[in-house]
Every structure is written in structure tokens, then in C-alpha cells.
Image (cartoon, rainbow, N blue to C red; front, side):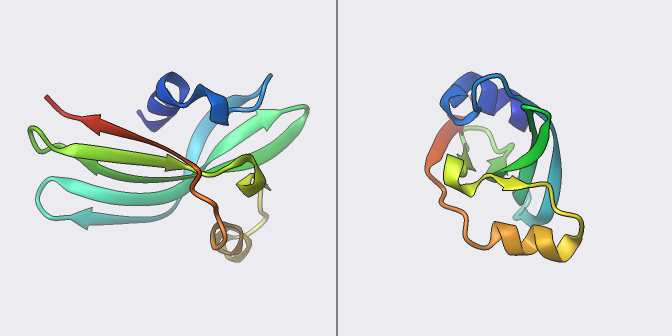
Length: 105
């Protein structure tokens, strides 16, 4: 679902000739009865490279609630890490440049 939201509402964050191919979660947290907070990165496939595009989302299924999806800038894209520590380290300094708000009706 997050890939679809980014493709549709934030196409400028995906480099030319690239594709999003799944999501690696760094952390998820349940928020109240209707929502959750997710931090992770999309697998970004382009130019025979495997990079990652950071994403953070506050999602809700509460009727009338607003979900927010933030995506890192092109400066925040990083090479696919070999371990969890490197993944967490790469996610520490992300510039959340792009965002979209979605309202459930």
C-alpha cells in the first residue's frame, strides 16, 4: 500500500528509471486502537544498483482520520546495508523532504 501511495502522490521522489520493490521495516509501533507508526525504507532498484529510499508513516484506519507518509530526499538514499546496525545507522540522519497527507473517508 505504501508503495502505491508514493508512486501515485510523490512520483518526484523516485529517480528516473527506478522502481520500488518492497519495504524493509526498521521499527513499527501500534498507536492507540486505530493506527501505527512505521519507519523503514523502500528497496530502490535502478542502474544495476540496490539502494534504499527512507520512508516514515503514521497510518490510521479511524474514519475521518489523517495518515501521513514522509519520504527522504535524494540525499537520504543509501546503499542496501549488509546488516541491521548499518540499516539503523543509515536511517538516523534522514531528511524528510517529501510528505503526503491522506484522509480516510
